[in-house]
Amino acid sequence: MQHMARLIPLFASVLVLTSCNKPGDFFYVYPVSQHISYAEPIKQMLGSNQLDILWVIDNSGSMMSHQQDVMNNMNTFISALTTNNALDWKSGLISTSDGEQPYAGFTPGTELLSSDPLVGQKFISAVARLGTMGDGTEMTFDPVVDVLTQYPTFRRPGAAFAIIVISDAPEQSYTNTATTFIKFLTQTGGGSLAQTYFYGFLNPDDWCTATDDDWYWTGSPFEAVSNAIQGHVYKLCDPNFAANLQDLGTNLGKEVSMSRIYLKQIPRPATIHIIYQGQEVPGGPQSQGGYWVYRQDINAIEFSSLAFAPSQNASVQVIYDVDNGVQN
Image 1: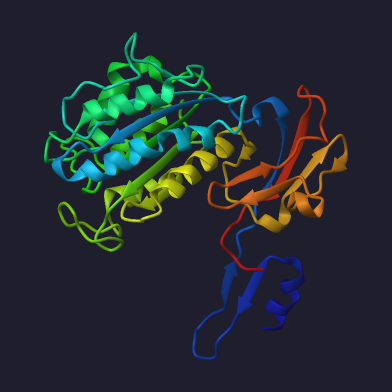
Image 2: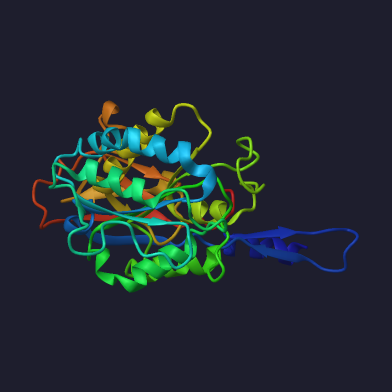
C-alpha cells in the first residue's frame, strides 16, 4: 500500500479504493468532461420570420362540438399569432381520415396566408367542409407524411413548421409509428427538429372523459412525439378552449421568432459562457439584466435580446463543459 500511496499524486482524476476483503486494489477513473468552445454566427441564431402551420383536425362523428370551438375561436388564434406583425405565416388543413385530399392551403385558390385579411373566414369555411363524416379510424402520422410527401413545397426552406392536432381519438396510423414519424419530420426539416413544433388538443382517458376509443397519454404515440418535439399539448375537454387556443397562438408566435443557439451536447449549465468581442455577455432573465438563459427542454441557449451585438455579421463565442453524468 505504500507503493500505491506514492502513485496517488500522479493520478489526480483517479479514485483509489481498497478493501481488506478483496485480493487487489481497484481503480475507478472519472470521465473527464469535454470542453466545448466555438464561434456561432449571429445570423444563424436569429429566429424565423416565416411559419408554416399544418392543422390536423379529426373529422369523425364525435367531433362536432370541438370543430365548432375551433371555428368560433379561429380569429382569436390569428390575432394572438399576429401580435408579431413581422411573422409571415401560412396554414394548411387536413383531416384524420386515411387517403383524403387536403381541405385548404396546398393548391392554387385554397391558400391560407397571413397577408390575406379574409384568412380567418377562409379557414372557418374549410373546417365546415371537413365536417364529421370522416373515417372512424383516426390518424395523424400517416396523413401528415402523405400530404407533405405529395406537396413538398408546402414547407418553405428556412421557415419554422408547426403541426396542430385536434382530436378526441388515439393515434391509429397504419404505416407510421412515432419513431418513423419523428424521423420523417427530421429529414424534411433539413436533418433537425430545431424549428419544428408539435401542439395538440387531445382527449386521453387519464385527462378527460372518453368521447371516442379509450386511450391513455402515458406510453402513447402522441406522448412520444410530444417528448421529442418542442411545443405543448392541451386537454381537449378543458372548458377554457378559447383561452388555450389564444395561448397557443401567442406561444407559437413567440417561439418561432426567438433567437437561439441549439447545442449538440448536453452542457453543465453552470459552465456556459457567451463571449462577444472579448466580453462576457451576462446570462439570466432580462428583468435582471441578463441577455440569455439556457432552456433544458430544448437544449438551447435562448436570447431575450441581441442588443449587445448590433452587427448581425459578427459572431459570439459559445463555451461550456459537456455533462458527463458524474456529480463533482
